[in-house]
Image 1: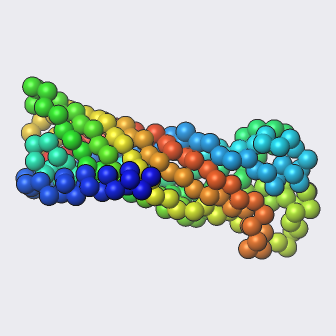
Image 2 (image 1 turned 120 degrees about the horizontal axis):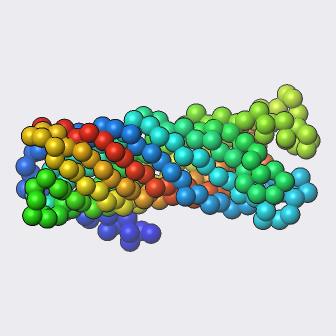
Image 3 (image 1 turned 180 degrees about the vertical axis):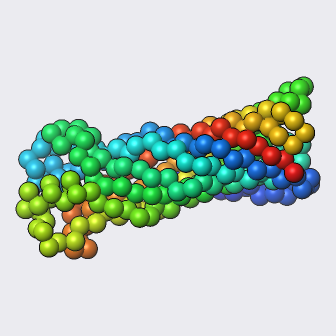
Length: 233
């Protein structure tokens, strides 16, 4: 993994060292995060509830927000892109066994991503296909435990009505890969289409009175796609 990060960092530095054209573009439109999630089992919950071992996992739902990406064109082939968006909101639930569908809580996250894009020449200036690779940082915040989980913990005598129950998710660094196309519509305007695959791994913890009662590693690893209007300055 360290080698991969070094390779990505080298590509970003190489792209930024290319002769600059100082051309800026902004893409604005719908951006969707679709988790391809998997997780370790909720072993503590399974043991307390008398469920079969390794019968549960955590799942995260899809969410769409307003995406804003900023492109800085360095030369005819290389561009740096920063992906940003309004905060994504996700429901975190249990999948599997007798507690399938149990709501664990909600979280918001921001996944700013910096990519180096390589743009291909295809013989038609209206079409601008590209691929990209870069680094993603995902910040989780405003985690909120569900009332359903609190009630379940109370029923299992893991918590009582006076206890403080919380959900915490660890921030994540990961790789990102991208492919897409800009389709020119007018002098300054284009359609922007892109699909990215992001490496987002986190550790989720359920805490009762600041004591962790369940910790689970979750690989969210979403596909991220965007359809946007593009304005080039």
